[in-house]
Image (cartoon, rainbow, N blue to C red; front, side):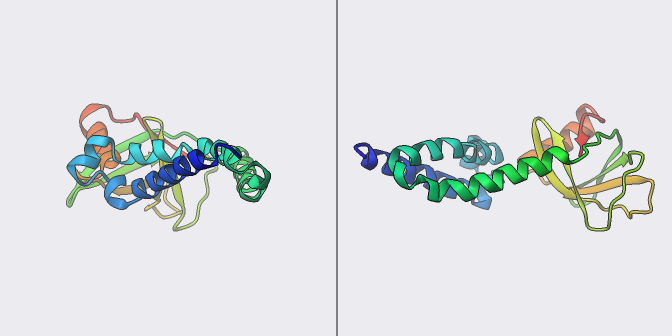
Length: 175
């Protein structure tokens, strides 16, 4: 179409931004610039623009968009359908302890009827973000435990550590 050159440049810039913000040094905010720009939050905001990407692709090449749209839409619909059928128990935080080497130990009360196998993960939510962590408790234990490495260089984990150990224990949810 008439706007193909412009949309092509914008698509290229947007894909470059997605690639750059996916680098570990940007996601973790391990230098001053990326920490100032938001670290993981910058990564999340840039990658949340995928809807804009599809709109630009529609403007760029409307007759061939189905090639790029069909499979991602099918995967998105399947993912949302599976996610909506999952039971999401919210559990109370019992203890949060600082361990050596920048590790925090979190212990949660296991919800009634909650069964899991060794090696499974849970999503820990705080401030509108959900992050996966492997359960470190054995399935036969009554409590659920997580051990999270949270050095000062990791923005979300270190902020969570500061919040739980200093500000307000019990303010997280687990699913």
